[in-house]
Length: 505
Image (cartoon, rainbow, N blue to C red; front, side, top):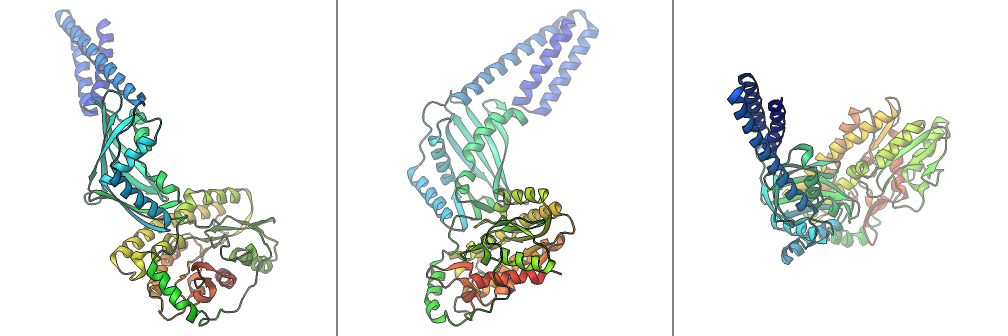
């Protein structure tokens, strides 16, 4: 019995020690050898049994000693928070901070950080943390191969005892947020598989996550590329300026005075709504989701927005005093509509109320910040501009699929969902006086083609907001104001509401 008991202990500790140092395959082999030796010794008895018993005792003591010493090193390393982390290179950190600050100022950003800049940002984060066991970090950018994306290898030196940790980080996107996949983590002699690496992964995730810097401006990351000794992030965000190209702004300013009266606004078709608020009660509801258009930016009263106008017309047409619940958030992208909670709030409301119609507008902020950038202002076909637009479209399709699918699941198959297509605010009606006009129309059409396809897959009705304002933006939006603004005037919202009404069967 002693032989079997000691054999079990030796098996357990040796297997754990081997799995954490060499790997699971070798650990299985060690287990099989110990089991086989124990069975043979039990059957042979005598001197063989005593020899195996002695060997098992040695294996047990070595394994316990190794695991105990290494565990002590790991615990000491993770809990040694005193002392400062290494200082980043000041010049490199300043360069990285300029890039991050610039990205936070614009609605459409393209952020490229070199390996050295990433290291500087991480070391700076380490020094600012009061509860940090890491002394220094080194990174290696590993290029992707074929369909496999690039990854980042890291080495950490801990403050306690000089112990080092290492691992590999992959990254993916989920509704505009960077999701880190931390694997192959090791500390000292220990490789930490599965749940056993949790403590180290928490430290790594906190230190290496760029989401904290990007989230301050409501970033919706549309593309992430690791390789060529840098990390490239393309995205849109709620806190930045839509129009940042100086050449574009100059062209609008130069033409505004002479062309302001060249395009006459069309007559109102529907008139203001009856509900001068975002909410009203009723036996059944019209639910609106979206960005600044749903949120009535550009007009002074909610009743002038397209949601309230549509609500009044449909209530009159159906003879029902519908309630209204408008969840629109200014600056929302397709990613932030998911990640910042608008979709979840709308779904909870739908679950608790009778809903007659759902309207959705989203996508303008995914695209327009890029169109208003220096990369796109002069030539939409230029490679830097196209890289931005392709990333925006790919991300938009994935996000919109999640949004419309979730809404269809919430309301069922019979309730109308109306998707309002994005208009082109550069479609001023100047006959090309602003060079971006035609290229922006093509880009907006590509965005709307995605919306049409996604909507069709889920039985949504499509309201053509692009056609409604085409060639009239000089009169129907605030683009010719002293500070050009892409949002509609009251007449623009009237035209968008008409597009929604026209989409109804």
